[in-house]
Amino acid sequence: MSRDTLTRGRPRPVANRDETLLEVDDLSVTFTRKGSTSVHAVDGVSFDVKPGQIVGIVGESGSGKSVTSLAVMGLLPKRGVQVSGQIRYRGQDLLGIGAKTLNDLRGREIAMVFQDPMSSLNPVIPVGLQVTEVLLRHSDVSRAEAREEATELLRRCGIPDPARRLKEYPHQLSGGMRQRALIAIALACKPALLICDEPTTALDVTIQAQVLELLKELVSDLDTAMIMITHDLGVVAGLCDFVNVMYSGRVVESATRQELFAHPRHRYTEGLLASIPRLDSPRGEPLRPIRGTPRDVVSWSQACAFAPRCDHADDSCATPDLALLADGPGDHRMRCVHPAPLPAPTDASGSTGGAAPTERAAR
Image (cartoon, rainbow, N blue to C red):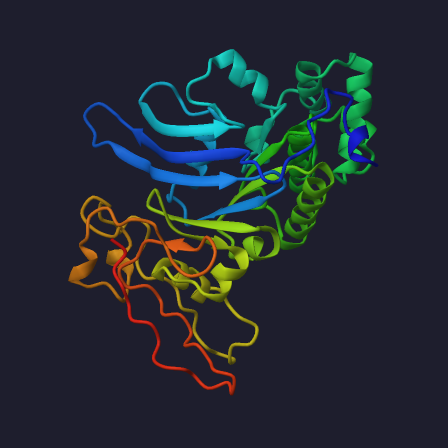
């Protein structure tokens, strides 16, 4: 099926790969509660997404990944939350537009696949009505046409017997089919930007691979940009073009996928990669987890937040507000006082040419 037959809604303009589709600039989200200390869930996050690009946001639970995505979608609660910075979609600041304009963008231009399909789908409404609702809201189609397109969407997303599934409720579907139904809803109007918040967390390994392959195929067919939020570096390795690693509300390293996996510089990124079991490791070799928990942090205003868990931390890490500085080729950037060393350069004979670069402070 071609991309034009996915929906009869207003066609999306041809993507210009040189433009910036989404620009997040110095985004901060603070949760406040009377009588309690304010929590800076997102603290000065900046990144760009271009048309057709897949950008990964990686980090442990509590790093601020999901809050960032909810801020982009405008789905954070109005009370007890302070949002600052800029979120520009095609040059339009999403934080400064009205609710009606934002509702027109959600679903049609920007869509999201949530983490838990069982809680994201309405349990008392048939799946078909939840798919057609998006089409009726954003497309000029009749109910009969919307139902026909919903059937085709479910089929395109790999759900068997889609006409029957439209009449069923979420609890009658398996976890994999519920996740596919969410993807069908998100892609119904051919959005220019798709945000996926850990879409494979609750699925077994086989279904995970199928869902990721489906997302990759659909994004390619529709020329849709995607933000993949995950803690699974295996997902990043097989899917993303560019990666932002978050820790304690800030981006600590950003690079292309190839550069990040070949030369991780921040000690947190190095620890994440080292903790993954490898098939080429000797039998019986113990895993190398990052010590401590994400709760073992200090404020960025005082020092590197990762210092309490870092094996290379010293007094020099008590540098307030470390900057995210350019490091290495391309767009590789990181904030670390003691970054992991780069491989020593080699001459034509293959021998190393001098000592490894000295560690420098990113101030």
